[in-house]
Image (tube, rainbow, N blue to C red; front, side, top):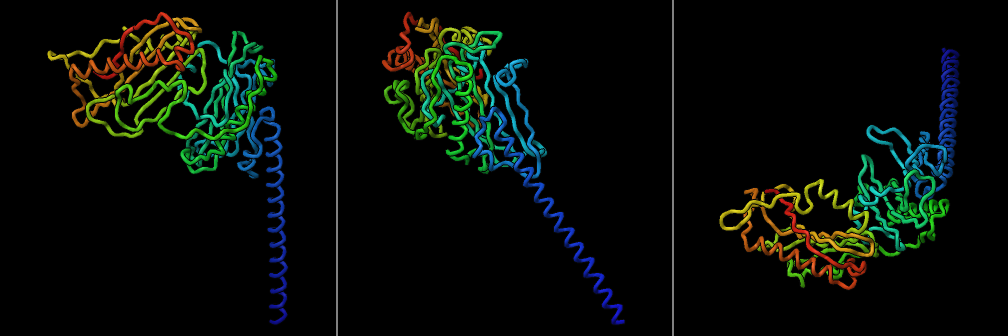
Length: 414
């Protein structure tokens, strides 16, 4: 019995040792495989997207258990390809249920006239790009949530005086967009350092295009400046927007707008910082926009199509006492005043939109007395006059002249 037990113990020990060795070998093999895959992925990051990816940032998201999926094309990567993009490159890892586990994307695209006009009408908040930009360049950064974690984005629009080669239609401006992963739990928590990485990546792509296209402008610098601190003062181009002088809501205001002059477009925005509704229906928000040349034509056509250009929508029906009933549409009602001028960039349009404080409550509609409704028009006209006369404002910088009013547009539900 002892001999049998001894042999059994020896057999178990031998089998156990063999299994341990096999398991250890598998672990070593698996670890070596992960290291090789990780090294291959890092090498891919170095070479992908014309070498324009922010390697130090992206390295923290590169896995070792799955290969990267690279999709890249564009006329500047392969001149023989049919593509609207100068560069379009996406590198992703892992197949999540809804989206890749991590994704990096950079794109540069030449803009045709219609795209330029559409972009000119978009938001252009100052301070959104953490790098000082020269004239003819504007940009912004943002952040958003993903299924797991968050992402940071950056965009730039760059003017090229000599134009862009290899286009079937003339183009003197291109746009760069960048999308990078972030380790923040949500888009709201994405740190300023990630915004800076995205901004520098966008500048790097833009400079790559500028250099290879020889489009007539100097490379854009990458030295960072402190992000703008929100406060009560607007930019120099928007300094005319003084709520106290204009008699608007006696609240704390916040401002955004163009930090640099652009002869094609101008934008200033101001609104109260809180979410309450001050009594008396004062103006709690004002937007001033100007477009010149092709941008003017495109902006007006889009507003006309939407029914928000002068003469394209009927005024709210009045009551016998002259008051107006405004219904709740889910959006803040706005009164827009339009004007046209001849400016340095050609025929131009100006649009001043004032937002009064209307509290709908449970009734879902508000009765605006005749005297108050007339005050809305007076407020819009006062803002337009101040905008046109401001020495540092867009109209004066553009030497606008022969200005005439085109009428009002009531942007509220009747």
